[in-house]
Length: 369
Image (cartoon, rainbow, N blue to C red; front, side):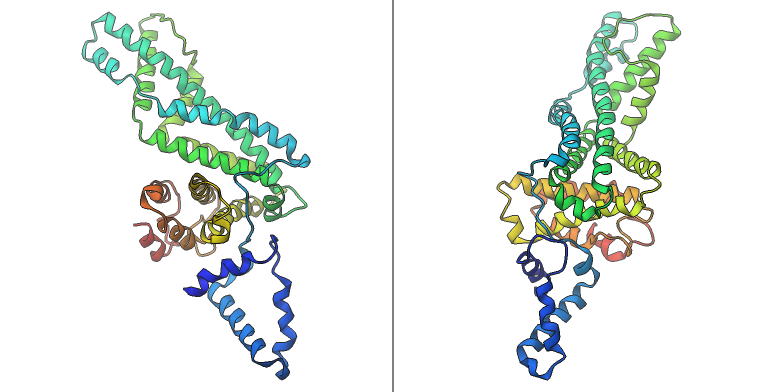
């Protein structure tokens, strides 16, 4: 275990590049020569043990610092960054509105219990309409977020660069991708703990249907036609509607770009998960964050990208062939205070698609129990 802790520190000392440190190869000539002496032999043993212990992770997992706090767009990133930024500027306002969403439960109960009281029916209607207008804004924002994600995926997977090179070179876009994932998990957490959302919308739809049957016109500021109401109903019926939006958007991106191998998209996701894990594991990287909020942000992004990968990749994130080190990611979360990470562990337990597949090892399932 000491070697596992030591490795990221060793890798941190090389330059920020995804290529192996060529200096490690300088010992190679000496290894095969008796004149190399005991120092070369020790170096050979250490590197051999590290590679044996860590296997493909040493080769495949990129180690670089992704600056979630200060990354600024380069000239090449500006067009996409501006497009996505115009969407993300609304994200905090959407979360604030959702967090303060209290629902019209009391007015609805009164109206249902007293169906012949016209005054109570009108009160319930007046209470529900502005709430449905909010729900419509949330849904419309999900469509804008879908378009923003499409633009980012296009930028972060386009030739001639590999996904790892994109993430390292275009950190401002990588940061925006992370912000979308952070928003998605935050929105879905709030939605899951607020049953008033579906109750309000269900009451609204029942009332509209009843009024239509009775040929009764009611003034409404909601401006939700039947087609929009159907789409909103499907959106809010899902336990994690924003995650489903991102999953569908990523799957659609892959299907529409047939000339682009699916691995380019899934590698972008797995690389982001790996980079977040390494930053959280490595003291040298963690110390560069100026706020504990950034650590939580990094954990949330890691979990978000794992869930997205699990939804999009054919065999998911938990299979042995997955490019995500799930044991390492879960361990990173469990090493943090439970108050910060229990919700994220629950997200892995309940919103992933392949956790309970036969290809998932018992050890990983046990870690998430």
